[in-house]
Length: 249
Image (cartoon, rainbow, N blue to C red; front, side, top):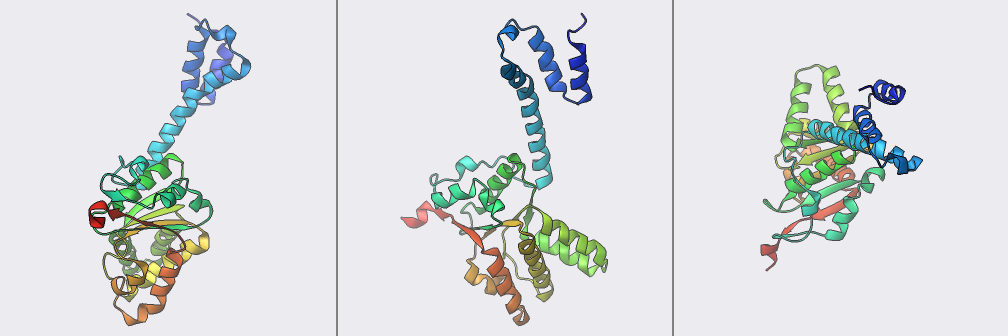
């Protein structure tokens, strides 16, 4: 049977709104159609297409982010189940206003406290909110940039460095887990400085407090100034401390 209002269906097809087109076909058969106001009709027509678009955008963002634990949930980032959070600060972070304010987020705790899960849940939520983000392991990040620089193709190296610097949200897991030479610290300093200059936000996890970074980032005496610059820039923002409940008994 020929559809009513073929011109509307054609427009929806040209505009690449297939879900809205199918919804419109179904609405024409609905006995409730005549009772809809103009605003109700528009809402009924566009809502399914809107939700479909949001879901596809979320899936694309999630795939791009590189986060491994895609099932991590922000609902779990609260005191309970053997973890103690500074819940008020967590609530501030989860509205993602820190990104608009160009601030960073440091997540601290001992091994097994749930730091990686915290970063993963934030990354998943950022994808849902349509932030462009990338989840990386600290050592893999530095190893990649060091390797590119050593290969001598400075154009390729600078392009990759800018890629990470311009990322709206960069999630760095296990920050300061390994010591690096002066070469590695030069690269890290350059990346952190570029992100600070661009106003992009970094979220990182570490088992070491910032005042300990001098011991764990590098043991090269020439790196002192750069280590101080890295610490000063990265710690501009919020601090999350995750404790194991058993440690507080």
